[in-house]
Image (tube, rainbow, N blue to C red; front, side, top):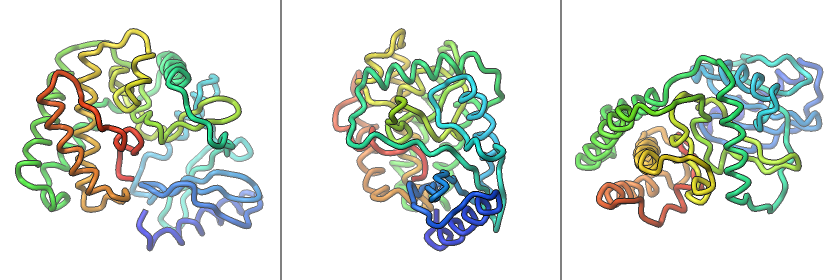
Length: 294
């Protein structure tokens, strides 16, 4: 979120929660990206705040309510208030249960894979209208094609990203494999380690597609412990995801710290990945970094 908007966003969240008869004296910023995530005290509510134009908050709340209600490993809406989207001063605000993280506890690949497998199993049982993963690819393609929104992207790099997105969208689509509801971006930044186990957050990216698209966001050690993976499809999805998150880094409005440096590094990784039978090493930054405009 733009620095100039943060103060107003915090004020909007505090005002809404106070109007719901919960006590708010302080707001701690947990995460600042395309949305501002706050921990409000002493009521201990998590508020996610975004400009109204963002437009996916209702989708996220409804989906989270359905999934959490079935015991799915996701963060749940705050139970003390009605699960809905609140609007104030040009912002949409949603309220969530605060889950105390387990400090300094590394997520084991086996636990990560098991939690993601549970998530996918529960999602397969849910009938919920969601976008297709190719809609996400289309957004990246539009960004690559728009020179006004990506003015610093060099011609050869623009061509590389455009060709990669277009060709992999076609190749993966032609496979015609099984598809289901997905998280959309289950990277480590969207996994919480809590006393009740691992929980996935940030469901606004949920979409329909092959499970390999989700696994492409997770570390390789996680995918190795997930059963029944199509390794060729996973490799294609990894390159596709790398092209997508590289594209976000060249958006003129991208707010990820060191985003342009990462975008440059990832362009090199795409070239290497396309030239080799499997993705190379040196992906540590990508695995730890959120995928969208962070």
